[in-house]
Image (cartoon, rainbow, N blue to C red; front, top):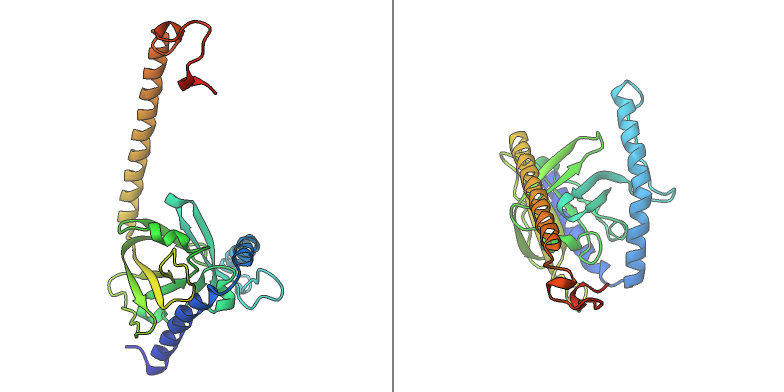
Length: 258
């Protein structure tokens, strides 16, 4: 059971995230995207150093420390989030204040005992991809030890920050929820709605099965491409796509013009 203080910490952290997401929308679009792009590049370097420090700690060196992405930063990368199917690769920062979320997704503190972690990001930059995650979609998260954990989306919900939000504990497996502002295409920023995507950790066997399935789909796609290429070459050889097959000599078919 969670102590009263731990429960309050988790609730306050989640509330800070939900409010911070709304305040973010009041900023200028150009500044928002500029910060988001530059910060992720700086965090990549910090993350590389973090993993190197973790590897040294495994061999008896000093305990790894938080590596700040820039000297005056009051946060640091704590995880790496990837969505392979959508070419998403993001570095997650400690904390979920509005200032932190200006540079990247933030990790809400205080929910660890629930076996349910929460990440927040903005709908027009880092977490714009959430609208495309359907039940069954997969993504993965790397921690500071370098270990990866795969997740499968089990559903999404629209939350109203004017009402109490209760975070459900992950009982039989770890849960991860990604939160952003909603609607994604809202004309007026700072509304009370949030979009939350919840995913559950996949067991090793499920990860392996999914990898095998993905490999089979890719192989089938390659085979289809080969067959279509062979068919096209056969058609060209038999004159179906050249001048004699329907286009007068010396002229170029508009369908094949470059």
